[in-house]
Every structure is written in structure tokens, then in C-alpha cells.
Image (cartoon, rainbow, N blue to C red; front, top):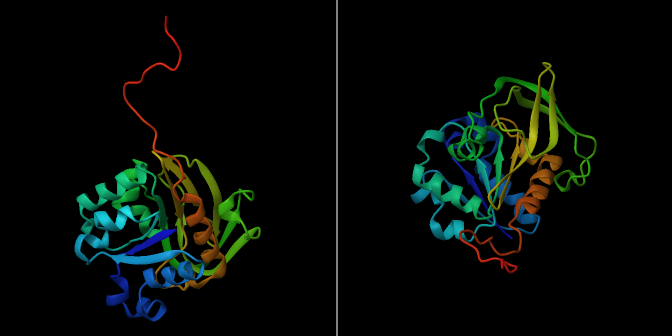
Amino acid sequence: MNVTVWNEFRHEKNDEAVKAVYPSGIHEAIADFLNEAGFATKTATLDEPEHGLTEDVLKQTDVLVWWGHMAHDEVSEEIVSRVHQRVLDGMGLIVLHSGHFSKIFKRLMGTSCDLKWREAGENERLWVVNPGHPIAEGIGETIELEHEEMYGEHFDIPVPDELIFLSWFKGGEVFRSGCVFHRGQGKIFYFRPGHETFPTYYQSDVQKVIINAAHYVAPSKRDKPVYGNAQPKESLS
């Protein structure tokens, strides 16, 4: 399976605290464990031509992983439309953390995707609320993160087609932190953890969830449905 990990790759260049955690970039940290899990993984970043998401790259991508934060507005509408169409055609999409405000996620959701937030380095407990779901395979009742940025409800998204994780934060907030959506022939998984100043993507359970999600949102092995005018299957006489 071919996975492309997309990242702005801006914080890691401009913020020493982020660079200390992810010296080669968040995208490389994610690509490393996906490669170890057996995926054919490549990376793409904002400042590459066409943001690294050319027609050819996307055509060969089964699952696209997206991390963005400080430069959502710099992503071109042409590339957003290109990714959007690939999702509708069946490409899987995993949107991480602050990617909730990305142009592609907001276009697919059709809502503001806004939420409450706080940077206090508090602990987060993700409860598995759908234990039979393939994305939760190999995960216990909870995932414990010692330090994370808080996201709190209300999260302005459509009702998820599948809810797998619900987060609780030390400050008292809760958040729908693992959501699956179906759009066209494609599947989208939003996963909340992953603030840039914390080593969240080195945590084994977080890695396991992303690996499971890549398998789950991968394109189905069937032909695209045929639309338009159709001849009857049975005689109308």
C-alpha cells in the first residue's frame, strides 16, 4: 500500500522547541513508523512545487496523511480540489491534530470545524468507545498521553459516521478525538493527538492507531460505481 505523509514543515524550521522534538519534521517521524509497518511511504511538504501533491503523486497514493497548523491559508485551492476529488474517488485520508482547520478537511466536512483549545501541557486520556472497530485493534481501554494541547467540545463537525475515541483532559473538557467519515468512495479518519511541541507521534499506541487507520481507510478493491442514465435490468413491458 502506498502512503503519502503531508506536512507544512514550517514549525520545525522556525521553532527551536519543535525542532528539538522533530528534528527531521513531523512528516518524517510519521513516515518512519509507517515504513516499519510495511507501507511504501513517501513524504510531501508545503514548499515543494504543487505542495508535493502532483497529479502523479496523488494517483499513486492509496492513503494520504495530513498535518497542518500555521499555514493552512497557503495551501492552493487547486491542490485542495485535486485532493478532494481523489478522496471522492476512493483515496483514504487521515487528518491529524490541527489539520481540523485545513482547507481539505473543512471542504469535506462542510462546516467550520472550530473547537475550544488550550496549550497547558495537561494530560489527555483517550477512551476507546468503539472497542470492536479495526482502528482500535491492539489498543486497551484507554490511551494515556502525559502532555498534550487541549481540544474541547463543541467540535463543529458533522455527526461522525463512526466514533472510535473520546478524549478527556485534566481541565475537564471532553472531545470526539477519533472520527470516521465517508465521502463518495473515500474514507476519512480524523485523529486528535499530535501537538508539535510534544513527542506524541513517538508514542506506541498513537502509532498503532495511525497504522490501523491507514489499513482501514485504504481504497476498496472494486470498480467505481457507474452513474447517469441506466437501462432497466428487467423488462418494463
